[in-house]
Image (tube, rainbow, N blue to C red; front, side, top):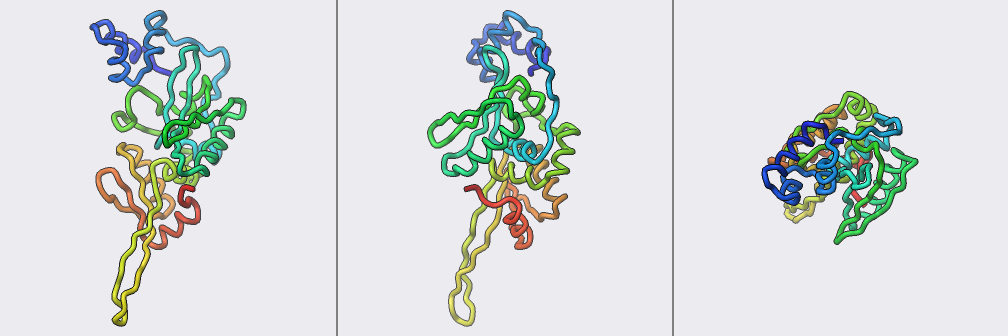
Length: 245
């Protein structure tokens, strides 16, 4: 849920003559929410008690997916939509994402919305913002992303599920090939490795901190890429994470 100060700043932009479209692009707030705030700026109270937090391996996995390819948006008639973008090339990922959403919020319906090359696993609830307090206006890499203490406790308890969610959203397993001359004959060798790619320094740090705790060696490949290439570390990743499928 957007706080009152965010609502005031957003409406101030409208008052300065900016269109709803331009304000929505600048703030990440939907036009329908801005229109609603022009009628009532104070956040409404949810008549149902908010669950406040979640736990378990399904939540740890869904948290990784959300930080990578998820978003939460307010709906015109109230409530929020959680959307996780899953590439159609990996139907197993779509199934796993839907299973995690259902496990975290068993009382809410889950649907799949197909777009070009992508399926949005979508679920509606009043409680998504409190379950994912990293929700806010703007892109994740343009604002600070920090886990709440209760979320960090879930990650500490289920670190592999969290890493699996991050890799399945913004990561990949690739195989590098090289040829060496052995006893005068060329031999082809394969070197599997994992990558995690995200523009947010905070989210990359959440990934690498968890890898450190798991004893997985990693290196920064470039400004946005984390690489896991050592044989024993790749073996661990293969055992507990695995490639998208």
